[in-house]
Amino acid sequence: MQNREILETVPLLRELEESTREYLARQGRIRLCGRGQLIYRAKEPVERVCFQLEGKSMLYSVTHSGNRKIIFILGFGELLNDHVLNEHETSLFCEAVEVGQVLEFPVSVFTEAMKKDFLLTRRILAAQERKIWRLGHQLKNTMGSIYLERKLAAKLWKLSRDFGVPRKRGLEIDIHMTVTFLADLLGAPRETTSRVCKTLAEHGLIRMEKKRICIPDRERMARFYKTGRYE
Image 1 (cartoon, rainbow, N blue to C red):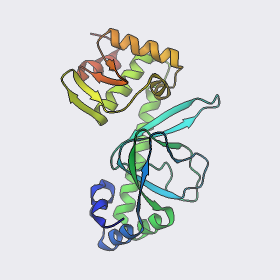
Image 2: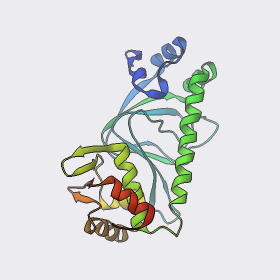
Image 3: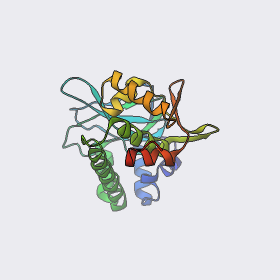
Image 4: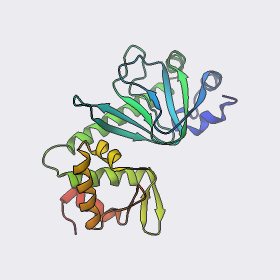
């Protein structure tokens, strides 16, 4: 890393103590990641602490049947690690969704900085607590009482909030999404996911074109996933 200005672009790393910024600026490096490239694997020792600079990455697990289940899609400035301390092995896979850049630090360097700067430690704890909160919210939406259409609608609504780009036809989710990707996101078979997408499209809740999904009316989408009513 040539200078510490890059640190100031990452919310979790802003306004730290002067000595912490100098230390991290000397030790950090930027890695280019291609679409589909693994950033880390499950059941491996934690070697690097990573932050998304450009592009997006996903955290996912692999079920006993060998299917992939996407847990999070993370964008600019977010902490990519499921574990930060090197006393543990990673429990998830992290993969680049698109071409991007990742800012990374050796785990020993980063934990040393956390020891010396409580603001950094507090922010990392808050980031991990938010992941736990989001997991709890996901579990609430995976119970049998919610239909797959509502489950997918809820996930797409959130993605439109995090990665939505205004278009004439609505809010387009700025992620390249195939039916296989959506199936991994939903945790359902590809054929079932395709039918669910078709149902949402037929009711005008989503528009699908060239592997992009647009939501014409987010308020209507929110009402549907909360109540199950299309109108």
